[in-house]
Amino acid sequence: MTDVGLSQGILSRWRGLVAAAGMALALAGCNGSFSDLPKHMKPLSPAIQAKMERLGMNKSSPILVRIFKEESQLEVWKQNRQGKYALLESYDICAWSGGLGPKKVEGDRQSPEGFYTIYPAQMNPNSDYYLAFNLGYPNAYDASLGRTGSFLMVHGDCSSRGCYAMTDEQIAEIYALGREAFRGGQRAFQVQAYPFRMTPENMAKHHGDPNMPFWAMLKEGYDHFEVTHQEPKVAVCDHRYVFNAEAKDGQAFRASSACPSYQVPKDIWIAVASKQREDTQATQQILARMERREQREEDWEARKARIAGILGGGKSDADNAATPAEETAPAPAEDDEARMMQIASKVPVPAPAPGGRVAVEPAGSNTADEGDEAAKTAALALVPEETGAIGRIGQAFDRVNGIMPWN
Image (cartoon, rainbow, N blue to C red):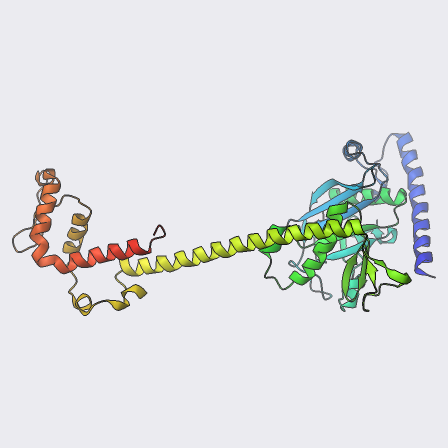
């Protein structure tokens, strides 16, 4: 059987199941209760149906799903009555496994990234994880690179080993939206799985990641959807995705073969090229700001190290040219060092005792009340003995001031 015949057969069987479900819903409605319906046949909630009506969407119109790992978001977009997709609902992903980047090998517990097509046969009403639909990994792109894996799904039960796991309530609604879209005639719906929202900020944030060439390719498909709000036509050739490509002379796209000559509709090509140019400029500006900030942080760390060396008694690079006199000058006693700091800050200090040592005044002394004059007198009294210490303190302040960021 050809792929077309197989797809038509699957769709025919699915429509038969949906028709049977419709009869079951009608009977349940007559009885006034939906509680006895199987979980995969339960109707959409009144709240989501009211929201669709507000957004100008029919219950059975086509859907499209977008997944963002880093933000842990799953979006369901639905075609409105103007024929364009609009965001219907955004769900918090309960769990996904692995890290940012594509799935490559069976058992790596990595959730896939890429463009996947969901046919009715991939919907699983009997999943061990409440309800599920299979992503169809590996797709043609994955297979062309020899990637392996199986049973990668979006499902309930909030537990992931390579899948995207939702709560049971969430997957019930997502499943019902897919079911109604198939009932309305949608042959398959698209899932776009991204590492993060493909914004200039995120592209700059992850610019050094080895997966960036792959993500830049995904961003092209992201941009096609962003500028058109239409499901992009996805093909694979030369081991890469191409979007909205129309091959010339009836040639076919083959995943592992060179791409045939193709073109993209002019209006789409112009809109995508314009968006990519703006995004690239914005990304470069963000990267430039990031580099300047990193440089400032490095400069400040270097300055802090030099300051710490000066205040801690060590020598910075600027001290390597110190004179022999400075290197051999004796360090002052602790109380004399403290006295010098007091004098430098103009704090009144007691007069020195005979011999140049500080005489501690008894409590209640009025010496401090003499203000700056006493400080000056004390400083002059110490000059003959402490010139070297004062000089070093002054030089230290000069060096600190010379390397502070306000200079």
